Length: 495
Image (cartoon, rainbow, N blue to C red; front, side, top):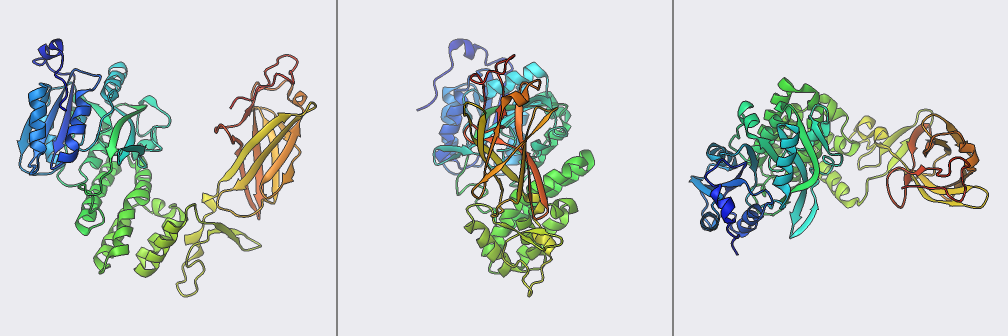
């Protein structure tokens, strides 16, 4: 069913310059195009135009686009021979008239209020671009986008990638609205190729005067097995990905070198996985190995040295051309539902190492430093319950070290209000359990909120951290609400 025609008042405004232009490149997306265009037609922001660019489609995509043009005058269709999504977007930008600019891929979906929220934010702040959270659309079900999951947890207006380094992970162009004047001033343009959007997204973040980060989900990114990146672990595709990485690194090296380590770390986390996949299946791994070494040579030493230990092992094996061993490590990684164990070795000086294949294998002689996982260890501390006994509060919880399957040797606890520290006696209960008690009178004269801190020691390793609430999540806090008098029956423990 086609979208309804806008009301007469909206249609009278068609001749005016629209507030927003949305550019949609189209190439053989017939099964998904209607859903995408419908999601644009029902946007709560009505003052917009959709510039559809038929990039030489050979299926029924153009007919669907023409039907939308006939039904809704906000939709415009232009065409070109098949040049790829980058040139198609450039052609759409040339035709666009809006004061703001956005992009949508023809197989994705835009939530109804997305553009209204993004444009309203830009109008309020004057920033050059606004970006928002993304969900993956998988077989009709929305899931978290692994690429974006860490980016928009803490929304912030009028910020910048050099202040919020997490934006280095926001390298897609379609979860944003750009101020058109900024786009032209920055001379942003898409290159040909598969990964044309990554360099533009990074350039926009760096060149913007300020950026607005929204916590709202503004884009549904469809995952489909036979998309343009289906063959992402094939050699030509990997060469194009490396070209995009080089383009971004060259730009960052010139304009924002402080972001290089973060970008390299993201490449080692996400992009290089496709090289591994190619090496796992290649009958002749030589060309892929050569390309993998070119990738590694492109990245900074700091990122390579500080990569997680299991990734460092994979990179080490690639560097030595040990493809069979790499495949075994990849199988090991996939077989682990959780992170692999970290084990101590040595008595006078104890090291902590990933318990991976080939650890201290005399035949391969891989240095212990490759397996060093000390910096990856994290203290896990949570409060399970805090109950009033009639005389004191009894607190039960657990203290463990992530990936270390051993009982902690020593555990010290104290309550802190940021100025004072109240030590607590600790009893152990089982492998990881702890029990402690405290009289709230000991907190008299202190701050309104107290947090529980822990120091854990095992085999020379010392870790400190704050307790979290096991039920509600977040930091555990104890707040005496009866002031003065410290009412024992009126204690409040907000989560």
